[in-house]
View (spheres, rainbow over the protein chains, first blue to last red):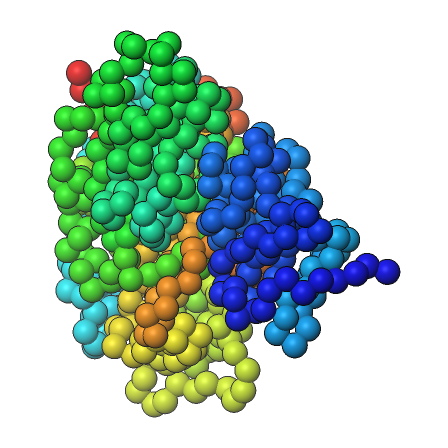
Length: 109
Length: 465
């Protein structure tokens, strides 16, 4: 059974924004895509930059350092610099509270 | 005896009411230029197939067309904030279009001045504070100033001023960011010709990209574009449309060397049909199986009142339906601007539609350096709602050569069928070019004038020193 931790409130994270939170010592980026919430590791698989601050559009985040694109919904990267996907984390929203677990996000069918 | 033979070449027209007559009979405030034909006979010589198949010709286009012509790289909405960038690719070149701190737009060759690596990945867009090469970390500001040289001690010869990012020409029109590789290019306005005047009431910058399809097509870029420059093919290629759209009576116009247009009627049957139809039959056809399937709607059957027309009732229905969907009052539009397919082509490779029912933009780029294939961008430009809230531009849905437009989520099924039919002929055409013992294609004087204009302008570019 996965354990969810309260990391942020929905009110803290407007649509299109992302914020890094600490999850048991791991930096996790929580993202709001059109008021759906997703969480990925806050570290680009290309060359290790923090993803926080990267522009999110249509569910894709652009790494602010070199620009590699990742889909925050499933972690998949785009192009030759994004071959290694981001680790994802399951997210649930309970009473306006965003909760994240160490488990991988369920991949949408 | 064919009466057309007594006319000078290019003077013959499809018998029956002209497009201008029919728009005039709408009796509304359609823009005057729609009913003001602008045709010139440009000769009737065959167009050599080698324009589409020769690698030498393609190389010449690379050298003398793409490196000198104004071409749009992205939309302004792709880069709304300082630090936003967009990577545009044409043939073998990659361009980095950047919104700088003061809100202006700059375009740089997408290449590090150290050892050439692309500063941002191909096909990407995003936001960054600076432009940092992923290889060694040489860094430039958004404004193109060299800001960081790793191991500076090893590069005493890298003087900041000489190592500014070189700038390409940039101008904007209608929310499109145009670039030009030629530092001596004439201003964009000259290239746009009549377009700004004709789009004065149809501001493309007040729209957003609601849908973007990017499909690979198996033919030369010009053949792909030309499949969309005439409606002569409608009767054979899109037989489902004969009752609801014109074809042989479409109006074709050319303006200078760089702009052309067709005005393709909707809600008026093909002149090929010999039967006569009531206005109610035409309206029923428009709503049942028309060009756009999604507009029929639910609820009570629409009737054409005594003395009215299918075009008028259909246009009002579209204005109400799309107005509701878009959160926008559209009742000021004329019938023609609402339902007709009005398509402008801007040389070399783009079509813009000032039309509510057909809010498209097409662009056809060579697929890298392949003479035999093309990248087709299809955009839907939807009006920004009256609330002023601008949605993010849609991510391109990528389709490979073999995929159908029916695979695109949200694309109207009637239009998807039309695009599948249009693009289905292309591989046969590209192969036919190479199999033919006849050295070139023979064009209709009137209906295919836009294709002739395109080749004549292209040849002028290629002949320039």
